[in-house]
Amino acid sequence: MKLAILTPAADQDLYIRIWSDWYAQLEAALAGAGLKASPHSWTEPLPGSFDAVLPMIAWGYHASADRWLARLAAFEAEGQRMINPTSVLRWNTDKAYLAELEAAGAPVVPTLSVDRLTPADVEAARARFDSEIVIAKPRISGGSHQTLKLAPGDSLEGGPTGPALVQPFLPAVSGEGELSMLYFGGVFSHSVAKVAAPGDFRVQIQFGGQSRRVDPWPGALEVAEQVLAAVPPLTYARIDLIRGLDGALRLMELEAIEPDLFLNNAPEAGARFAAAVRADLNR
Image (cartoon, rainbow, N blue to C red; front, side, top):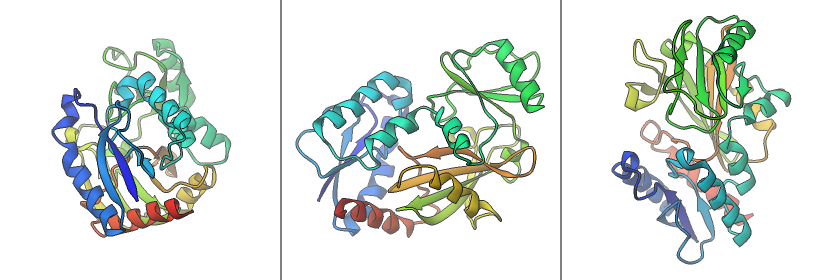
């Protein structure tokens, strides 16, 4: 079976020098399950036919959201099989999905969604969340792009320029951190704790964040199951949980497009990912 793995656009210098290491891990894992993968920029039409397309390294799509959604529409029109399904990829692109998950009963970090961020929105969020410090981020984002930690009096410069989310700042991010839980074929695989560098609020490695493999925290599996129960079956998903101001674990993000699988922390999990992909193809 032939698979295409979507990769960054050739002109995206931020990613173009580093994606090959991620790709090599995925390619090797899939090969172990008898699946042949090849890389293709997400911005370009596919050269030929493929049994399925995985958007696992479609980094940078958030910076060209209209182009990304157009590519998904093109895949759909062509009848191209996507893993995860195109409808899920489209839905997961905009973090407004958090409101839908909350309405379905999943415990979500309290979130205010706005069409365009204003100082009045920030003040409204502070009052609603009873939190002097809040986080503002674009609804379509990645890698903490245009994400701000806002204390009273802070400027909105450098923050979201379009539809945005505002959430309370959660001190746990630089304490126990976020818990990333990886699921393949709906089955729990492994979990990783991601902790921000001292004085920062972003857990990504480019900002000094650190990750380590851990057992699921008490109650985390139950919360993750609540999240998964609210969405269609997924071949792969990363569920990011964090402890809220009330001490309860809550969903920060459900990543069903191009999650880091943390295979450096759990090398054996590559085989579980590949097995889930093959099972999807065999259905």
